[in-house]
Amino acid sequence: MTSSDMDIDEGEDPSEFEGGAYWFRQGAKGAFCLPTLILMMAFVGFTSLAREVGLTLTEVLLMSLFMWALPSIVVLTGAMSAGAGLIPAAIAVALSAVRLMPMTVALMPVLRDEKRTKTWHMLIVSHFVAVTAWVFAMRNLPSMPRAARLPFFAGFGSTVHFVVLCSTALSYIVLPAVEGPIAAGLVLLTPIYFMFSMYQASRTSGDKAALILGLILGPVFYHFFPGADLLLTGFVGGTVAFAGWLFATRRAEL
Image (tube, helix red, strand yellow):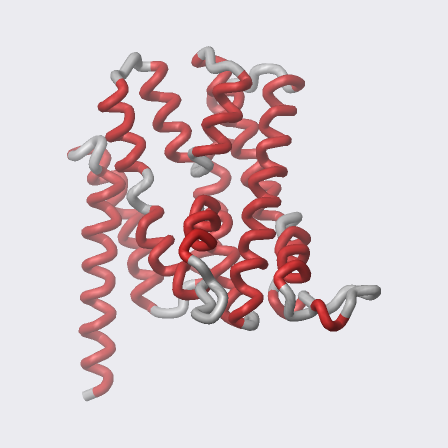
């Protein structure tokens, strides 16, 4: 679903077209899409891993509800299975979630309506910022009316969150244990899918270069600096890509 698909449904009150309730519903409808299905399958893989570690259904749902980003959840699960203490586990999870900070910083100006948006609005919807919602929002929101963006994103994010929580609970209860390699493959579906989606949605050569450098540098830093590989990959790859793009742009202007 894209912004061009969001026409007024038959029976909608035209006076409500610019209202938050209408756009919240449109965002909720947009949540039923391929990215959400892939995210659901990834969480199915996580439930199998969680069951092997010995996590209860309540623990799995609380982690999914309050942490939301699957890589951070997997990191915490691994720390728990390894018997890591509270502080090391918290540091590991925080480092794995560092990537969400620039994503949130980039998205907030797109969402904000200076006339209507309150700080607590932004704090609430920032919880939904993860790769799935971020890519979808950055591809669809810029072409929408400013007043529609926040309620649309809130509808999309909350619906995806609810649907994934329900599918996670159902898979934990109903499905048998999935083989380790299959479960790991399901967990990897989301980053692989959205890596290609982000490449397709890239607007500049610098964006594409950053993704390619990330693929190259990630395994290198993982080998030499385990634990800090994600942070170093993003910092070094992003800096080099931006510097190269800036140099090429200024040279072309001469």
